[in-house]
Image (tube, rainbow, N blue to C red):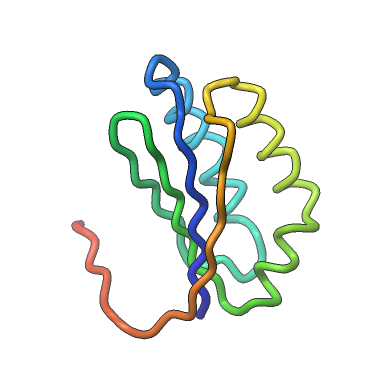
Length: 102
């Protein structure tokens, strides 16, 4: 499994719009991509990370060429709340456990 982390700063005045978009557009778009194994949003004040879990590197590579993903990225940029720079890091999953409530 591979872990992909997208990082950005953002304008706190746009927090509500950003989170609404993340949960109503980004979450289903990412979750619906082949090979996706999970999506988590992390946020504080003016900074956000989106952690996604993928079956393998091929699934991440396919994401980059996916038109639904491209449309999702264009939509979040159109909110005009993101900082100037975003970054992506990819890691190999090395172990651990995620126990979600409920």
